Image 1: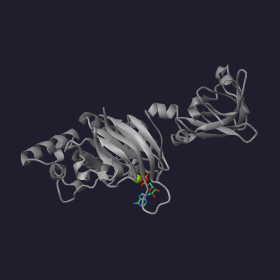
Image 2 (image 1 turned 60 degrees about the vertical axis):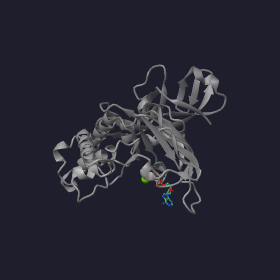
Image 3 (image 1 turned 180 degrees about the vertical axis):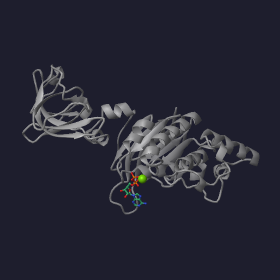
Length: 344
Ligand code: ADP
Ligand code: MG
């Protein structure tokens, strides 16, 4: 069942000549974790604010658990929406201990509020620390408190804006996994915003990618990475290679040689062959002998990137193992194992 349904959402801030978000439609299923990704200014925060009720759209509607919460001039008040929010800076109350911080948003009789708060604190694994104050906790722990506070009132959906951006790289890998497990254990449906593709790929069930206010693609991490709908999406998850090719009888003819492919007959005009650096290799499969001139080798410890030119102005990058030694300038054979074909 869809917990959140968004249809045709437009938002333009006063006097802005461009839409911050335009014609956005998608649904989020119960228990799903959706990552919202895009460059700075692509409309991620605006979309969260529209869902939370902190902004009102110019067009479109929003449904939460089957109820319209936004349509036309109607807007359900933010505090009535039953949405949990986690902000980038956690926004904990510094003068309240952890228990009181988490208790804050829960309504009902006092004993029940304490009970619910304690359950949420246990869920994030901070039972021992419930009398401590925010400044006595690490960044990762503060974030778990913010999460406990947002989950405790049992929201219909949890919205998190850049929840990992204040954590350093080492901590981030660990916290990301913890947060995912906590969210899954609680069963809450969640949307989190990030500009880091690694956060999205490793933590989300599905990813929605925004570009200049438009939704480009929404799909499972693997599908988005392997079958991006357009070059923008492809490059967003790491720079891809693009080579121009001409379909001929037994494949695609490129300036590096022939990529054998029976699908070539389905194309009439020129195409772009798009592939990721890891989907090609310099240890060629004998079926396919592409050839180019080695321009550069960059060593990264666990892998190497080689840059290969066709001598006519096109070049590609190939990710290869860390063992092979290259001797400066040489001609290299390579093969491309997995690629997308885009007509021009
Ligand atoms: P993101 O979170 O992806 O960085 P935002 O939703 O914050 O993007 O911004 C989307 C666009 O809307 C940007 O062009 C931004 O400059 C503009 N914008 C955001 N907030 C406001 C505001 N309060 N007033 C005017 N323009 C805004
Ligand atoms: Mg933002």
